[in-house]
Length: 312
Length: 136
Image 1 (cartoon, one colour):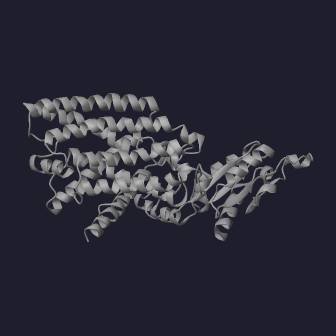
Image 2 (cartoon, each protein chain N blue to C red):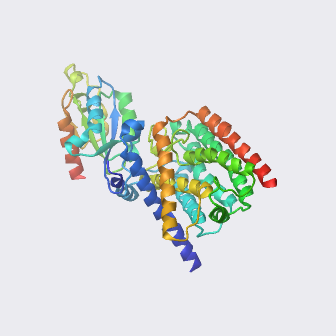
Image 3 (cartoon, rainbow over the protein chains, first blue to last red):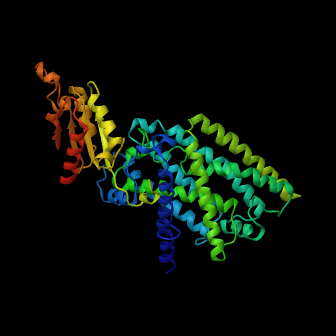
């Protein structure tokens, strides 16, 4: 029974079905802004629920070599990772920050493996860019998570959310020394950059429904393409929700507080989409300089400040 | 656009294969894809033939270009419809009059529709796309 319940969590709520629905709404919001605001977005295949169902039933064009296996496994891994992450955030499954980080790494690394193993030359050319993007979010986020764990004295997502429910959101909580409080404020931009990048949004995300030549989606078709699109869509709601859970969480013991949570997540979605609309997609070196340079430095400064603050 | 339309919106995915030639028909197709709403069709362009519902081929295909085009078209799903557009692609263009017909595509693959004209008009594309979608 426990096994079946966990499968339900992963498949329906707060797993796949829930994040796909939320992500589709977020993507609808993104598409509702005229294309003049965000460049090439008018040129991508229809990705509504109806289109996804049509793709699921459609023909899958075979790819050669190892890539054929990855074409089926990769998108499923992405969806599974995001669903599991959501179960951890909602407290339906236990998991520490290490598992949480590993799942995000799995989600992001699939793109890299696709680039490596692709038979298409233009897709393989994206290897460095994709690798830079993975390093770009992984380095600052690992430091940010360490700092959060140090301040809240907890290595589990539920512990971090519980701490914020007790003492107030991390960025405004008066608990701890002044340095810890400054550190928490400093780590917010770094976290924002990481989750924007993970969601694939501009300026530092490598891809989100761009479908330009050389995009990994050009290697997929049929059901794997549907799963890939579903995972990218789901990331649009998962990443803002994690961002809120890490920095602006609060209690959710009654309906009013749940509604407040929903509003906070909606605000994070709108903020991320606004940054996406206002930015151009950054080139590889800029991703590295900004993510590892600015993001990493901010995260490191936040870590040191939190360390000093918690120690005093 | 209504954000809620992301749930049930459906679009015909078009892959445009440009061969050689003056590019007139190709420009007509590009313009038509972006404004197909005027013909009560929702279309969007894709960059891979694997995603396509319809492939539109424009331009003149000499032998090397035709073999490259065929290798692209072979990646399309079985239900994908293929339309050749314009006199050059349809094999009845200016080169036909000189007695040299460099078009080789029609020897290699079968088309679902052929639109003649130099350049072919956007109304003809809309009509043929609707006919192909109706027969799919």
